Amino acid sequence: MTELIKTFYTAFQNLDAEGMARCYHDEIIFEDPAFGILKGERAGNMWRMLCGSSRDLQIQYSKIIANKDTGSADWIADYTFQRTGRKVHNEIQAEFIFKDGRIIGHRDDFNLHSWARQALGMKGLLIGGTSFFKKKLNQQTNRLLTKFEARRHS
Image 1 (tube, rainbow, N blue to C red):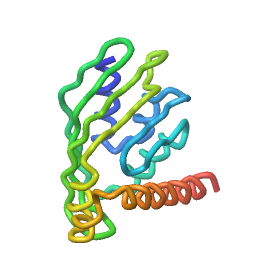
Image 2 (spheres, rainbow, N blue to C red):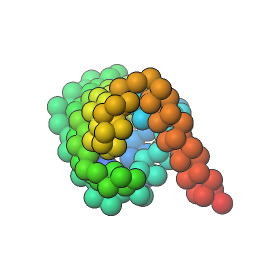
Image 3 (cartoon, one colour):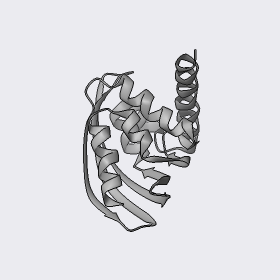
C-alpha cells in the first residue's frame, strides 16, 4: 500500500485531483481540522476544489509507512492563502485505512492554531486555537465545498 500513498501524493503534487480521487474507495471517510468529516464523493470533491483553485501550492511528502490494512505519511503544503495573501507552511500527519486496494479512511492532522496564525495573522493568533474558530472554519469550508459541488453538477 506504500505505492498507493505515493500515487496519491504524486497526483497531489501535480494538482491531479482525479488521480487522488481514484485512490479513494467509494466509501471513503476523510477528516481534517479544516473541513471536519467528509464522506464519499464529497471527499474527492474537496481535493477537486483545492487543486482547481490553487495558484502556487507546493507539496512534499515523506515517512510513508504502510501494511495491507493501514498506513501513514507526513506531508507539507506551502501556498498563499488566497483570502489574505499570506504565505502558509503547513506540516500535516496523515493516517490511512485501506480496503479493496484503495484508501477507505484518511485522517489529516495539523496544528490548526499555527495554520490560523499564518493564514490570518493577528486574528488567527488570537482565536485560531479555540473550538469556536474550528467550528466556524468547518462551516465556512463546507459552504465553499457545497457551492463548488453545485457548480460542478450544473
